[in-house]
Length: 241
Length: 221
Image (cartoon, rainbow over all chains, first blue to last red; front, side):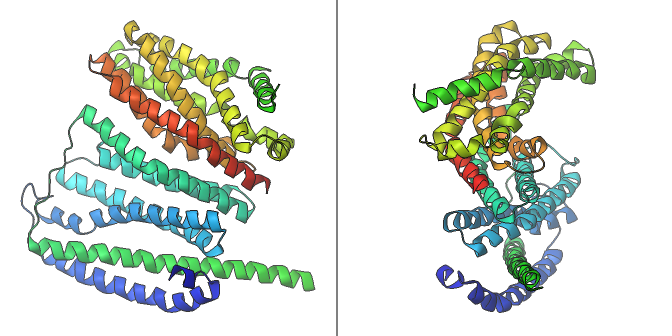
């Protein structure tokens, strides 16, 4: 599959169909998921939020999971781009970063809204929250590096190296913030005991956000390919005149 | 004398000479430590509570200072091309550069760190541990910072870009180092934090030069 799609032309033929299919899938899954999410009974104390606050359960954990999954996807792309010098893999890493930053930002924002509803505070220095914040900073650093170097090929390769350093560091950062938090205070988050009513929208939205990312990612990679093509054509035209 | 020995002496001379190294890092460190009580207030209670932690924050910030010149200068005047073409592997060159960076700034700072911490109200009994963690942590800061410095070669943003790239990676050593000290201050076992800090620093001492060399080759290509 990866071998097959490594050819840019074949990728473009495939992605012409794949992007809208993932898009439709995302709309269908998220539509069903959110409909069910608003239909579930209101939460009781200790189940992740009383009253309507329980509904955060159907998009906040999903966004947070995606924010980490996207970094993994970006680092994998970066690795293939760095080792095999493949243009599509480079484009994949570049295209994933702003999406990942967006998902991370949304996870942080919905998290603090949920926090206000259930804990009565916008932010606490809990291990999970801190790790998510550091992840957001890693995305910003990647994008800053990409933007700061003039030569696009060099910028991409430098950013690829940074993504690989980051993915080695992420588990260490996760471990360290958990260790740090445990010497200060115990985790304030209780376990969720979910009934079957809650599981369906939870999983549907998880798949929905994943499909949404895939659709947006493919669209962005296609845009990168076109941008490169446009640049090459512009150089050609300049050479003729 | 071997090539790497010559390189070591050259780097050390460059880092120490012309007001570099400790002449720059120590005043900066002192300034940060002075601004802190001015911002927090002279009340000894809150200052004492953050004394060791803030001395670590100042260490992390100070270690960013000379990173910008670590590769950029050699890149601009062409020395990096010669080093890349030379007999010595570029990984070893990067290792030497970061090691000297640590000797010239990290090690003197480690000796200054307990003074700053004590001025802010930390117990004098913590001095050996503060020096030891600052030495180890400085090693980690130099080698992770070196990756950022190598990646930003040839960019137009220099120092600020390095800070943005590198500071998130400083989270684990800051946590482990400051954690070990605060545990010792509370009379708890500090060895876990110290061992983890050592693990992190040595891990990047071993791995960092490979990333740096890859980044240098990319910038020179």
